[in-house]
Length: 92
Image 1 (tube, rainbow, N blue to C red):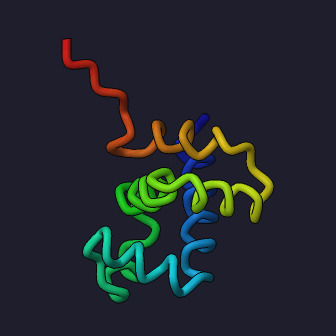
Image 2 (cartoon, helix red, strand yellow; image 1 turned 90 degrees about the horizontal axis):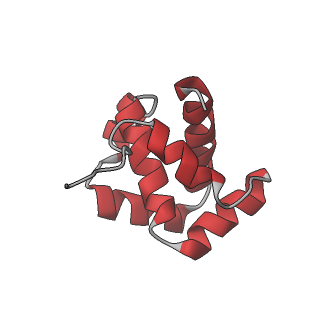
């Protein structure tokens, strides 16, 4: 998957979160971002990676997003690996 494709899916995820006040406030609480910060940085790959991290933390959130945009549930995890900070770490 190309980074541009990953960013498009992550932007869809951000739209999904922004469309639900409860999710949006939970996202702000977990990330520490303020609404103005999110508006200013929404297109940055690092922020988009954080959006996917937020969804991947909770299976119900993840499945709701996948259902809403008609994605296979494993795809956001694949997308996350393409964005900054999503690389697999090998400690050996």
